[in-house]
Image (cartoon, rainbow, N blue to C red; front, side):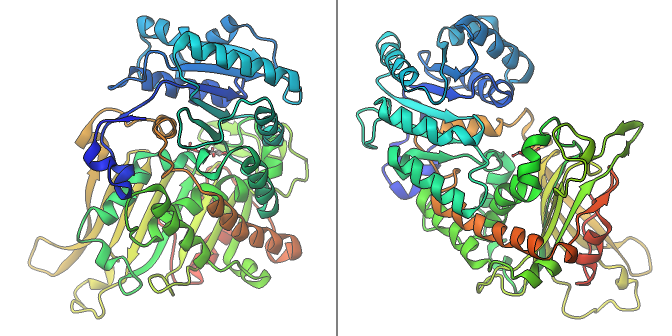
Length: 519
Ligand code: BG6
């Protein structure tokens, strides 16, 4: 690995902070190359990295692998269409031509040993032609049922370098869903570990690649003023919202298996929770950061059946209208059973049992077909201990709220009370706001760009470790068990598209004397 900031990188505790990260030539082998993710996210991200400063090495190489009998040319065309439509960087024919020279395709039936031997020979040949030195990143973007087959056969065909110290590297990126519950995640971890060591495995959660999500750490640990008040003494509660206006978008079959609990809560929502709640790490090295995140997950006690009934709400979108557009209900989506009980909305109250957070609820809500696409983390502070301004309109006083907007209109806002000009003592709540767009201009890199580059330079800080995934599943399994055991305590309530989810989601937070933020 060539890295140009020795002062930072020499110190392993600061490894994740290196400023310039130069990528060694390598081959990225994408399994599931003819799928949506490859065309919409992966190839556009790689192209944007090739167009960035510093760019990917000109001999960076991509091998698409899938079952369809495509030629190199067909795959390149598929890639080019994706780049034109989805890449952050504008399409540049000259750059495309160089980039496309490194793209090829290999047809593989995922259970055919001989095909893996052919693939391995192809990789060795490409190493010679393109000077990629045996460096390989395997990307699993297929349906998860093939993960084990692919990994075992890659291992058997000798395509994977087991050492992590070189001279060449092999790494594995695994897409979500990572297992279906804790048991299957543990099984998958064990299977992957037969071929790849833990520090060769990069479990991707694209939320961690979002600029604003990483900024949660900078806000907390790069400033002196927030951390001292980031505790139960000053914080009343935390709200994390990830709302989407889209429905399941043709992924009914997958959603029937997953539901929002597995699709969004197990990964993105709990990852956001760990970043907000973790203790300052001893350094910014991957394992130090992840040690702190996993401690948060361990401090969240899995809910009992009664707690699930009390602390969670699930809903499903019905048919209706969003603006002037008529939209189908979840049960009318392709691949969905007409009486499906699958959740497309989840709200949950989570308790983190440690010194910093005891007694401070974390309210999470996420769903599809909500009024808009918006994700934010809001820290609501306690009110002043007594009201000096009573009888002066102070009853209108709102609590201070620090909100971190993850998307869209990325930014940070702080709400506080000010005296409205005039003879009377009227207090108004105002917003102090920082917006990424107006301060920095331009488009921030896509989450996948950041994460693919991190993997290329061997930095796994923003990827989930084995124990993190398993701990997150334990919490989710407990909720699922509660729903299964007492379905009537927590029925799936239908909600109208374009609303903030089922009525019970409002009641459940109001019971605590609080309310969801109006977004
Ligand atoms: C994915 C989920 O992980 O995240 C999707 O599978 C969801 O269902 C998506 O739509 C949301 O990601 P983003 O980046 O659009 O907020």
